[in-house]
Image (cartoon, rainbow, N blue to C red):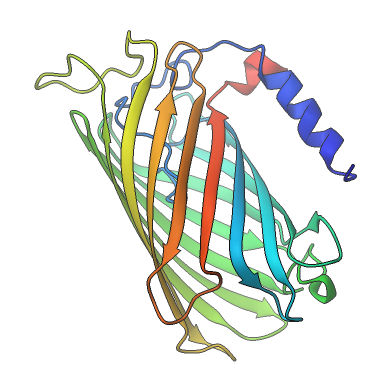
Length: 279
């Protein structure tokens, strides 16, 4: 068993017994604002999420094929108005013959919602990528990066539209600047929305949603300058409002000439449990 496996097992054992409303307690966001596959939501809440990616025909720098990655996302809301918070993303992967290992951790010390309404949220994020991975094992670049991100959520009854933009520059190690744009459109099958805002905690047992993402990653400078990967990500979400747990499954399908793998199968699950209810 991986040295990191007990950490994930303990985390899940801690979270599973907790029953909470759909969004974090006190949050008045539209129920149509779902958590997507790879596009990050703009609304700020306490969050616990696990992501899994199974790579088809992935090839690392040493020509080894096949890959699997996991990432743990933990977010905290520092204000009662869900206005500002912080987040950490801890990725682990098996991208070759050397087994499972830690990749470069990403920290978002400041996330701030400039617009914070039930159906529209616009958030800015400052990020730092830390050189915690081992480059010799294909698990990181051993570089430190700084980034600026903007997220937009907008809902209209059952419909949801989300946008992410990110620019990141390597400030130590190999010089590189990259830009990412991602967008998602989703439809949640929430009953009885009519012309009103979709309820934050629908009365139905589960809420299915269909979603489609478009993700573009472009390298603006550095040794890989000019590389551009464009992907479409269809998927499904299944949300259980009474407990708050949501499960998502989909695929990442590169449609550009540049690509990191043939395709990926994506799976994730998570919740917005208040940290005060856990500790």
